[in-house]
Image (tube, rainbow, N blue to C red; front, top):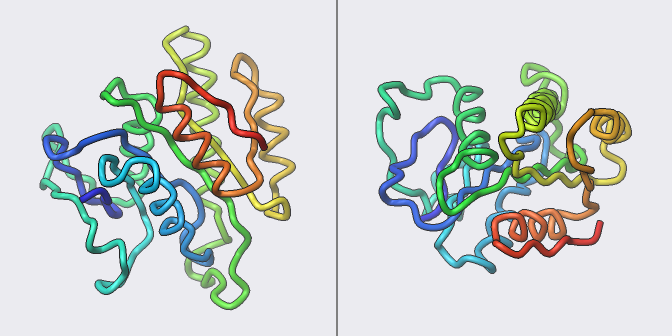
Length: 204
């Protein structure tokens, strides 16, 4: 079992291997998280944990890989989906839990056949906000010299606002240079490299 969904809390005693967090658009996007899972599975088998915020039907292939969960963590539950995203971002991105994990951000184009519904807000708006929060955390940790954020990002070259995202990272002080990868495969490859003792940089 290696998938934890939405605002459920994983039973950490049952987790083997690194934790990865899928950060990116859900509503309006094709099921890139399934592709991400398969790429990680090729590296780790079942010895990893992947947090996914997309809501799946009971017959979705990933539902068979759900990991055991608990009701609360440190005396609190993750009732709101945003709380869960921030919790797993922290676990994957800068927790000292071993083995180390990584945040995997992928920004695909909106699916023209199944676009984001009006009540769901602008496409990928929450992902953009969380990227900004992660950038702020990168700056904070760098200033305090308390390590770094394990974070990789990739995007379709035509993703709206990509130039602004790239510029914001380039202008941020005290953080390492961020490569925005051109495919999900390269993005996952970079995440895998970040969780291993010897880092092998993926080409953009």
